Image (cartoon, rainbow, N blue to C red; front, side, top):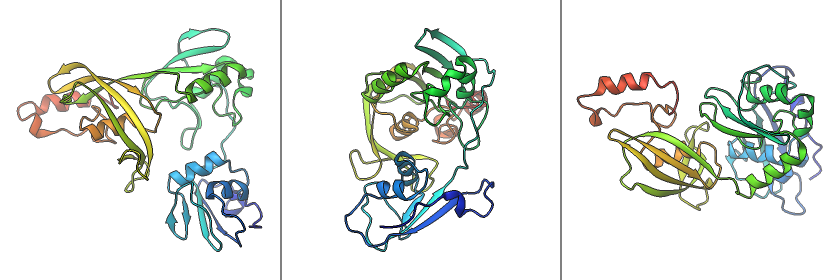
Length: 306
């Protein structure tokens, strides 16, 4: 395997365009089988193993025109295609964006994130994020809090349209300790959700694997628990209030998969009210034969999932 490291920027014709970049690698003679994520992180310039694994999970890495998993071991003459969706990120700039700080000391602060705010810059949202606001609030010292310089002090995330508390580290020591606590699952994350219908069982646990949908890679799907596809995901739920047509649930996450609550509640058959992506924004006419207009007006008041 003597391929020279590939620079994905050199594979594009324009250099500065925002179109996806694709690289192709032909594996030479393999002396020792190697995982594809390890191989690509060595062969593709500036590609970390985490970024490679993310691309594999998104279905952006093909081997002989087929989607593979991160643990696939390359073979001689394998033809690998890898697509990069995001252009190089611009430098993170401080922005004077108001944030709701509910607690702060010398080591950390807790922010009540508003719905509609993206946590950190990404393709399509390079400015106006919580990270931009944090950089303004903490100052230049925030630059030492993250290697990528795009997530200063951020150790966990919330979806754009989800509101809730986010813990921000203000120095490297706090960042390391908080990150370890999240990794060791010592932090309890509890969410509230307004959902369609009322669960037959008031208290329960949802266990599935969650991974990218085969039909739409932007959407997460449920797969058999501890099966080959997706990653294990566990969510406890408790009925807090029966609202006849709807119910208020309390949800505790034991894992942190993308869109875990939304996908799990879809699996349960009680989608989050207003969640268009997972079926919660459509009206079940049969459930409301005499009150469809009322429910439609209610949904009009919800610009996002509840």
